[in-house]
Image (cartoon, helix red, strand yellow):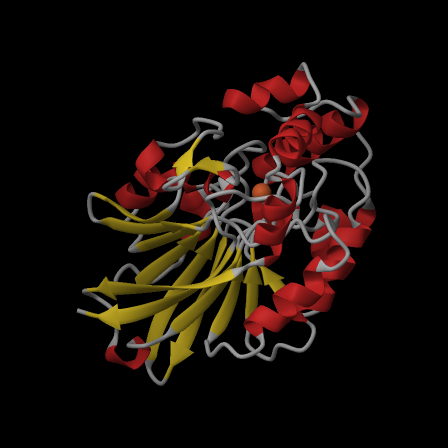
Length: 314
Ligand SMILES: [Fe+2]
C-alpha cells in the first residue's frame, strides 16, 4: 500500500498499529468509492438514497425551509463541570467546543460560525472531529473552510479526527496552528498547575483510538479531559480515570421528534449519552449536538450548538 511521505511520520504519534489500520481503512474507502459507513438506521444509506428520501419528506411536509433555517440558528450552550481534583488555578477555565463542522456542506456556513463565536470568551478551542461532509475523497474544501472559521482566533486550538476525516488534512491544519491530538496528550499550564488534555483517534469507524497510548507519561494525579469523537469510549475512559469526556459524532440526532427525541443514531453508545451532559459512574461527559450538519443542511427539534465548557473546582 502506498503511503505518502508526508504522512509516514504520523505512525510515531498515532502508534504503528493504529497508523497501519487507519491507512488500510482509508485506502479501503477509496477503493470502494461510494461505499458508506452506515450503522444502525444509517445502514439504509447502503441501500437507498437516505438523504434524498429525507429531503423529499421534508419538502412534502412543508418543513424544509424551517429545517434549513434551523441549520444556521446555532446556539451557544454553557456547560459547567464541577471537578473535585481541579487545581484552583484552573477554576473557571473554559473550553469552546466546535464539533462536526462538516464545513463544506454550505458556502454560507463558515461566516455564520464566525459570527457566533466572535464575541465568546474562552481559554482554548476543542474541535471534536468531522470537518468534511463526505466520508472519502477530496478534503481541501472542508479544510480551507475550517481554517477560515478559525483564522482570527488567538486562543490555542486542539483537534481530533472523526469518522469523516482522513489523516491527509492533519499536516495542512497543523500548519495553520491547529494542534491535533492523535492518541496523544498535552499539558496545559497555569502557574505551577497542570491540566491534562487528551485526544484519541476516531473510535467509531476507524477504531484507531488508543487511550492507553494517549495517557502514556501523563501525570497520574492531573485532572484529565478527554476529546473523543464519539462518546462510545465512556467505559474505557472511566476505567482509565478520565474526569471529563467531550464528544460529538451523534449530531444529537439532527432530525428529532419534538422534545429532542432521537430517531436516527448508529447505536454505538447508550441513548442517554447521545446528546448533552451525562454521567457514567465517576466519569462526567458531554456529547455535542454538533455545530454543522451531515448530509443535508437541515435540523428539526435539535438545535446546532457551540459549547462553552467551564471547569469549576469542587
Ligand atoms: Fe459528524
